[in-house]
Length: 249
Picture 1 (cartoon, helix red, strand yellow):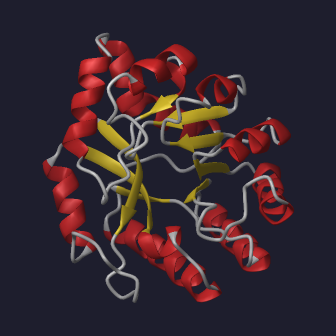
Picture 2: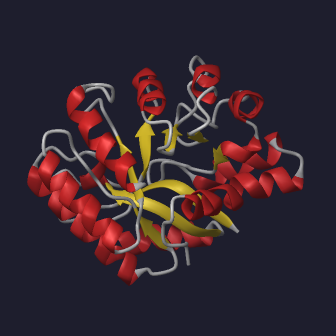
């Protein structure tokens, strides 16, 4: 089984919708045809949220999509440093539904780095309640991981300059998604040296990228079948169990 730990579903009703896939259904069908067994996601409206309405709509839709595609789509909560109380309410609501996964969160849209106070107050709340956070890879992610050593932090993408520094924090996991990730020859190999196969997660940044390419890179870079299965699925299921989140499926 292959579980994609980093995807974003289309937001057809959102003015910012600009996706190859016209509907969530067509995106899900595409993943299934690529032999992806499940996908952790938030919507594009969520990942690029700018307003409180974006946050509310994205989280509402994520929970609805879980019900529609139960067993396949697994929702991550969207939080935003400009809307801390709304964000905390959504963290509570996701937790009430058994979902302890947050993100992927990005810092470049709001121009607030993850180690600034408005983000840190939200991460403190996540750490207190046992959420894992998936963050777009940046140097500030290392500060977050060090500040909250009991919070599981997933770094999205492979930044070769940060690998060893990030790997020193034992609460950091790495997903191999995106253009700055597993597409580059040598990137997955370097990640294996820094993190080992037990803290790496399969991810693609779909719907922006082709899953086949990342599957091929894992198959070529990781020769050991047991290590490959850990990256493809076992690590993410173990991480969700570690944080007490509802299992996939």
